[in-house]
Image 1 (cartoon, rainbow, N blue to C red):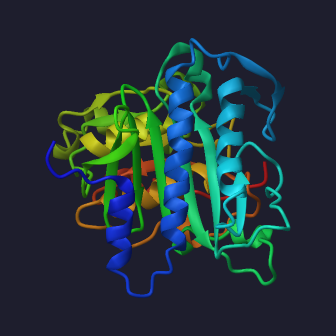
Image 2 (tube, rainbow, N blue to C red):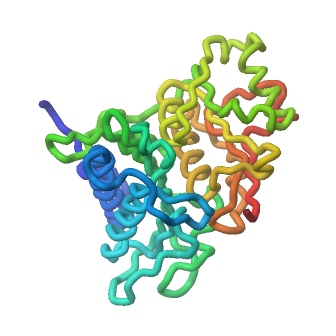
Length: 339
């Protein structure tokens, strides 16, 4: 099989390049990899195990929780909560910071996560995913506080996602390079399959729910029309592809080159995707994968979310070139609002 680079070996090799590394961040990556393996196993057996359908409860956003949603949330929570390696946890599925046992030690980082993105696609056997981000704890005292989870994107330490599809992949970055690992079911390990991912500048795919076009702002309409008809070389071969699972659409566009949009509209005037759990982590990955690397942060990165469930007007892609309509459509603006 040749030289096999597992995610654990890769993490340790990266750690050795930083003389000041304590190993805590490496531990958190390992715990997340384990969590994703467990979720992947159940997702792959969803039709055989009792994990399809609704869980007969709603989450903090008022959405119906699917059984696999609930399983994924509990899996990540339990893997981190019992590790003693984390300072705090926050899940998109829960209204409050997750309580940790007083008997366990605390680490120096907090983790935010969306346990199962795309839950409406679960029963249709369409790709779903997990999104996470890691920040340093900034509050005083032993336990993490709300301010630790509401930091702006400029303070993010690492982010990643898992996608459960034809294969299971785990993609992560600490802000320099983006690496992808594919789960080998025979070995039970994530193996490096996509080293140093670079997002193509050419926009080959745009992803947006065009059924909502009658609710769009004029700026959004102009941008989509620009992609379709402007003759701009960057969009010469662009096709429309929309899965409806953020992770799946983002992953395809990361590899092929493209832009994902979930814009504000008349029904969701502040946008719908969650700034803390979805927008900032994936924007961090897109920024690290851009060529040349984007050094100017978006306005959303300079803003602290007001609450963990703040929604955002969302555009994710390579920001090297935006169309002349930019003065009417700000693709990098995500303004946190109370929803």
